[in-house]
Image (cartoon, rainbow, N blue to C red; front, side, top):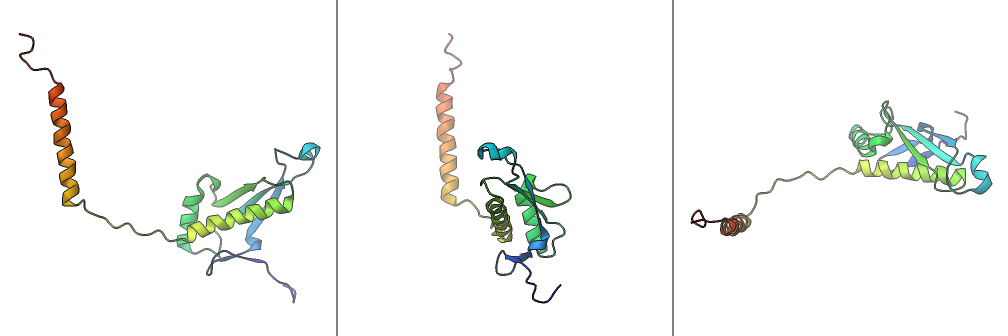
Length: 149
C-alpha cells in the first residue's frame, strides 16, 4: 500500500466496520423512469458482499445477517443488494451501501432472550368460566331427545 493512501472504511456500529474492498458494485441497466436514457445508461447498482468470508463480521452477527437477509443471500453466502431508485449511479450506489449498513445494524442487535411466563390464576379462571359459558350455550342449541314424541 503506497504511503499516504487512505483505506475507505464504512463504520457500521461502534465495534463493527467493513472495508470498502469487501464490497463489489456492478452497474446494470435499470427499468423505470429515465426517458430515452433508460436503455443506454447502466444506472442501477448490484452490490455484492461476501457475508460468510468477511473478516469484519463477528460470528453471531454473520449468522443473524444470513437469517435476516433471506432470499438476498445466494448459495455461496454472498449478499446481493440491488438499488435502482435513483437515476444516477452514485446515488444508487450510496443507496445500496446504506441498505447494506441497515441490514448489518439490524443483525448486530442481540435478540432479547425470551423468559417463559406462567398464566395467572385469574386468567386461568376467566378461561374456564368462558369455556363453561360457551358449553352451556351449545347445550341449549341441541335438540332434546324427547322433542320428536
